[in-house]
Length: 127
Image 1 (cartoon, rainbow, N blue to C red):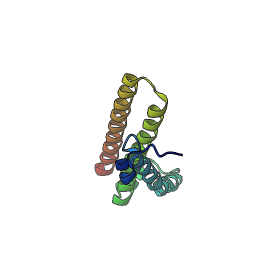
Image 2 (cartoon, rainbow, N blue to C red):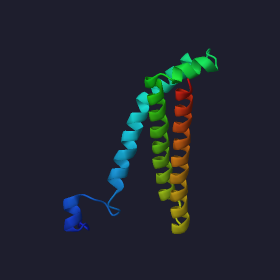
Image 3 (cartoon, one colour):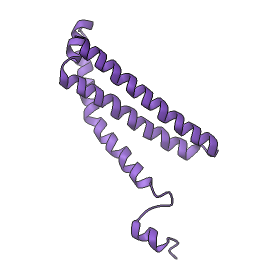
Image 4 (cartoon, rainbow, N blue to C red):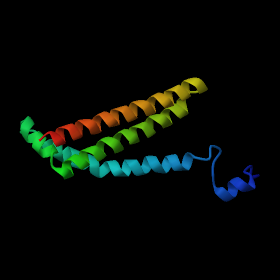
């Protein structure tokens, strides 16, 4: 079987797009980061069931909880953006539609992450 890769691509170990490996590892690392954040989030939700709004505000005003919630929001939206990007790149064949979709999903993820962080900071700093 003949090797169709150029000598330069063999040395660098890159595929045809020259960036797929980085995206793959970024998505895997964000997934690994989401595991402890999701466990923390689920246990936090379970502990907040019987609290009223003042108790929840006091809980979120604690620095550890506010930081963890901000990390959960930022890493969650980043991971979701990476996942949707892969789906768009794999299944949208029209170049213009694909480009517009990628720009739109990036914009939506950034706007929602900023809104989430702003909301956490507003509640955490209001007390």
